[in-house]
Image 1: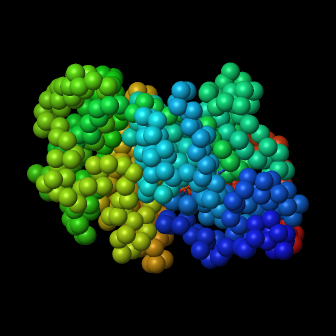
Image 2: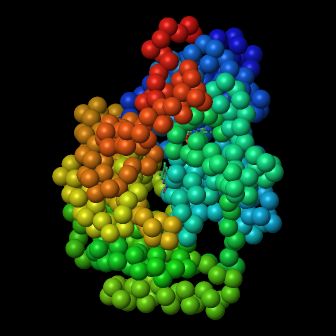
Image 3: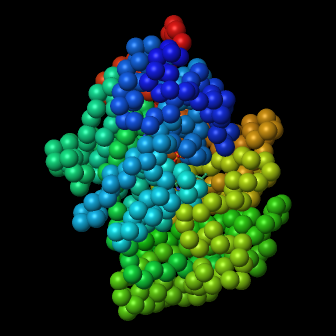
Length: 468
Ligand SMILES: Cc1cc2nc3c(=O)[nH]c(=O)nc-3n(C[C@H](O)[C@H](O)[C@H](O)COP(=O)(O)OP(=O)(O)OC[C@H]3O[C@@H](n4cnc5c(N)ncnc54)[C@H](O)[C@@H]3O)c2cc1C
């Protein structure tokens, strides 16, 4: 197999470099690492892997913070990062992007056409496509929903090397909408690479407003922040009303050991993003935000740039994408979270229970939250830093995340980017018909189960006799 892989890809990569990620999820070492530079290499690889029954895990940069790009032991990592073509249809506000297109790259390309995208808190070099395939979220999530909502179609390869185009592009070649055809684009979203390898994605872009504001509201308690978010979602006109728990600011300012919060300090920071094409419209939206803050007796919103003048360490929050060093470069090196989508009315309860679980386990209660898609649902995500080289701490983190996941599921919050640690909890609660349909779909598109078989536990070919 090695020789055949070298024939398709040239030199192979270092397996050890792809065994683990930042999280508590168990490392697994692949047998081979291949780096795709041409689309044609992908069907060739998939046919070969199917023939040999060897699992393949597609990967962009592996920064998903859920263990989802950790390979199968003895399988193949398919590094897609060199496939970074961008083609923008400015009139229809849509782009075809490759898996290697990063946040900073797409931002720069869009700006040339007066177009914009929203950003996660992720590093600037992470993959936009992979985020959309995992139903990730951004600073435009209140206005336009999760990144999965922006996907207008894909070009993908199934395990037997078949090329498929989905969405309107299946007929017209142009990714203008998911319909009006059966919506098979969903066959590749939140499947974590188990149904096919996506090589192009049609992604919606949005107008770049002439005037933009990014303001911060310091909320003395989380509950008042949630009330403001709910009212703001209904009032409309905001791209995002994203909440960040107090430990984020403390860590960003350089504090290492965080004790209990000083009651005089804010508990939640809300970052409000909005824009308009005229100054007058912008001023109206600014007044709306002020009124929302006033109704909760919160201090008036201030420009994040002004706050950065006072505290330059907060610069990463002023303009995204940015590398949040306080999450990535701390001595323990470990980063993980439980992220969920669920009901707006249970935010307070979810935040309270999550914070209690984190604090009982000795972690600062770092919360990320926001209303999504006009306020139809909300995000609750709890982030933990930890020491990756201490097995006992890794085990404690695993237990904490299972407890967090269970508690949030009890409140109807469903994990996104579902990591292995939470799979049992999710699968137990899943409608049996839905689970059966997932397996049937998997069997139809990947009968030998070679594509990321342990994701969603849809079958592992390595349990059979495999010749590598
Ligand atoms: C500090 C930090 C903060 C973050 N904040 C956010 C946030 O606010 N919101 C958010 O949504 N995300 C956030 N993320 C996660 C990050 O944005 C996304 O995970 C990232 O953009 C995905 O790119 P990646 O290169 O990490 O993907 P990878 O980890 O390489 O891949 C992710 C998954 O997609 C699969 N996959 C990748 N490419 C393909 C393909 N072409 N075809 C099929 N399957 C594929 C992989 O097998 C894997 O299952 C954050 C990450 C970090 C480190």
